Amino acid sequence: MLSFAPMEGIGTCYYRRVHRRLFPEGIERYYTPFLSVYPNLAFKKRDLKEITPAEGEPETDTALRKILVPQIMAKNAPEIVWAAQKLTGLGFREINLNLGCPSGTVVRKGGGAGMLADPAALERLLDAVFSDPSFIASGASLSVKTRLGIRDPEEFYDILPIFNRYPICEIILHPRVQQEQYRGTPHRDLFAWALAHTDKPLAYNGDLFTAEDIAAFREEYPQVSHLMLGRGIVSDPVLAREASGGAPLSMPELKRFVLAITEEYAGILDNDRQLLLKLKELWFYMSALLVSDEADITRLIRSLLTARDMGEYRNAVRALYAHGTLGGHFRGI
Ligand SMILES: Cc1cc2nc3c(=O)[nH]c(=O)nc-3n(C[C@H](O)[C@H](O)[C@H](O)COP(=O)(O)O)c2cc1C
Image (cartoon, rainbow, N blue to C red; front, side, top):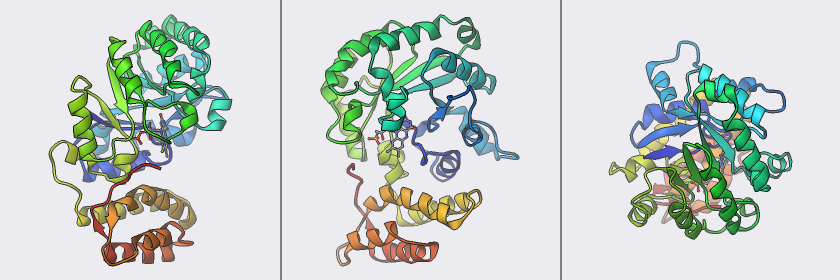
């Protein structure tokens, strides 16, 4: 099973809608970007849009919500219990807890990967959640998306046994530590250790950027049934289709996707400046697909990523389409 990772600012309800409509093959589950529960037991209006139906939404969007897992950012048991009640009330069964966000601000507040800093505190938190009558009554299943720790990959030796003691329904492991952010190579050796030391479903996430990467991973770890794709699928929206034996992305498909995303966001963002930022954020990943024999592709991509208004942006995209061909791959940041 291939899933679409939670990607804040990128894998939004608007993006997911377009992605599913255009490329329905390969992805069997989508995760929302993290929904913050704090500071006051409430979801922001923007986050609520991620999990509630839009007025008059088409059938495909309703179907899409059936394979959507909301991810929450919470840092204590009452917040998790509140979110479990709220989300099961909206019809979701599984809730994913973010234990991996490496952002300094989030970690300083004790959220995301910050929750891995003190395994004893993590254990107390899970204890409080799983013994809470309201949590139990909600019927929620809790999965976690975690890193290996803060500084040292071997911190996971103390963290996994804690997960093992609670009825967590799945552990999704991005085998880097918080301080690595997205640098270096994922610690696959620690992932292999985790596989051997848990009975829980263990999903893998990290640096699967091409269909070949996915095939090689599956060959090495045939027992892992869930692979989560993040930057790879943002770069190549049909990565999951290709990895499932389908056709690679074609240029008309890329153009159609970019146009559809542009239209979707133009409909909800307040102004062109916001639209431009959003599109540049996506092109940061997608531009890696384009190569050229005759043109200086790096310069063309730079013009796109530094465009100052939608006019400059459109010219840059046109130039990229005119001179670039598909064949490149995102290779990490
Ligand atoms: C821009 C961006 C936003 C992200 N937002 C989230 C998020 O909201 N929740 C989360 O658990 N991980 C988030 N991540 C981490 C990804 O889900 C994923 O773990 C990471 O990108 C590694 O997987 P990959 O190598 O397939 O990209 C984010 C990553 C990026 C680059």
